[in-house]
Structures are given as C-alpha cells and as structure tokens.
Image 1 (spheres, rainbow, N blue to C red):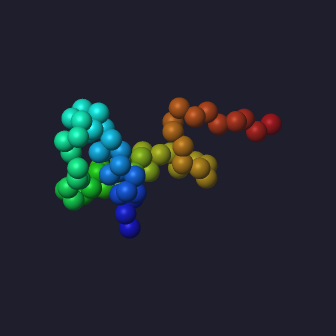
Image 2: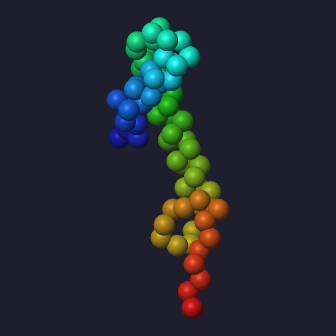
Length: 69
C-alpha cells in the first residue's frame, strides 16, 4: 500500500523545480517516488514506536491532554 499521492507529489515537485529552474524540469523519476515512500514509511514507524501507550489517539508530544474532572 502506497503512502504517497503520486500525482500531488509530482505536481508539487515540478512546481518547486519550476521556481528554481523555470521551464527546465518536465518529469519525475520513479527513484524519487521510491525515496519519498521509504522516507514516509520510516517516519511513520518511528512516530508510532516513539508514541506513549496511553490514550486512543496518535498525537504529537506537544499536545496536552485535557484533565477529566
């Protein structure tokens, strides 16, 4: 199962490339998608492994839980 929306990634990459090199880049290599997919998967694994085992919601550590009274 892919974590990437390849069409959205392609559009973003080509837009960013066009800002740096106007009119030069037209395609995105499969290697780029493979790299991005691997990066996203490893970031997701690290996030879940580093998450505390309390609660039912995956959230950033900066989030503070509401106190139940």
